[in-house]
Length: 486
Image (cartoon, rainbow, N blue to C red; front, side):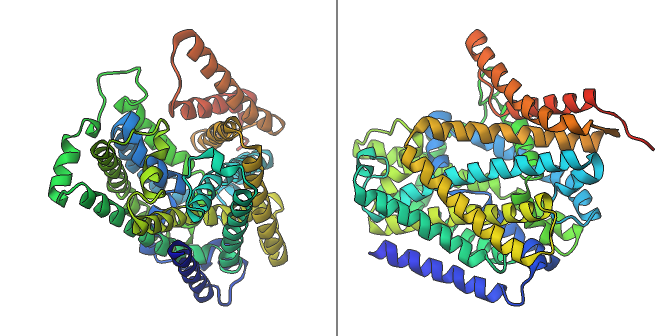
């Protein structure tokens, strides 16, 4: 009951922010917050928006298999954000863009523009829905006081009903507090949700330290001396945890999944000036190393707690934090903290995804940015489709389907990288009729190449597949294109 009351109070706080920020709102407010957002608010809120509910659950468990080597990727994030701030943001502000894919129309033509927008909508809808599905599954099981990883607990009609109700209510609440103010509301709710998420994280860490009978100083020493505290891998070039692979991948992940993603860029485009947007992005780029170090430190502390209590570590590393926090092993207070933390992390990702997809469909696909009734209808439809995909994944109940969707999302950003790189680095024009086919063929070739190298050489591509995907798209556009007329 305490969990339900706390979550309801949290939702009421979001609705209060919505009412305060949605006064006299129109499409310009929904899409760009009238370009009046304080840069420091955007920066702080973006930290939480970049950490999804899946990240909240998964990063602590990473230490079981990867130690703390994820910090190498986070270091790459910093250079990636600086690249976006000083290469892409000036272009977006120069053309006063509402959606970043409008740049493709100006530079490469209508076919590239529509291809980029559709690839974004496909990857964002499926990826965001599956990530939110996992969060809804955890939250519904917290409400039923069952172990979130217990598949048997989902067989009863009551558990199905609770899950469906969780999905419908949570999606409806996101639609409700974003329907009028849109991105303007999200700038403020993301700030609030970031505070809630990190408050929950700190309180869980302190609770675990207390259960280990340690002081904060002793806990830091224990983490630093633990076998899982390894951060850097320089000696193994084949390993997916090799420093340079992780570092360079971190740069490209940010450039592509932030700089070329309408969802992540939309809030940055609400700042008053280009200089403010650059300050915002550079400021929050430095937050990801300490933020993820906190999550990974919690992971090591939970491993120590499992050893102390004689509890076997889960085979699926993602289950490490929920195994303790969601099951009540750390007390009711931690269940509340965990629920608020994961809801805050997931809401700050899902609400911006729905807003960005609504924006892109209205502006890029329908090309009717001024039609307020269209925007309202599309926002409802996006929420319904989002909800239906989550329920479909649940009732199919297949891990292979979820994995397939994640694989699909991991491949769809490569063509966006290739399209934008071609637009920025060349003066050629692609053959419009071939652009969609090139964008589809590149991920297919990458997938086949990954299968081949895995079978023949035992080498499995990691994040570097994103760069290869983008390069193939770039080459295809070059070979089929021609020099632009002066």
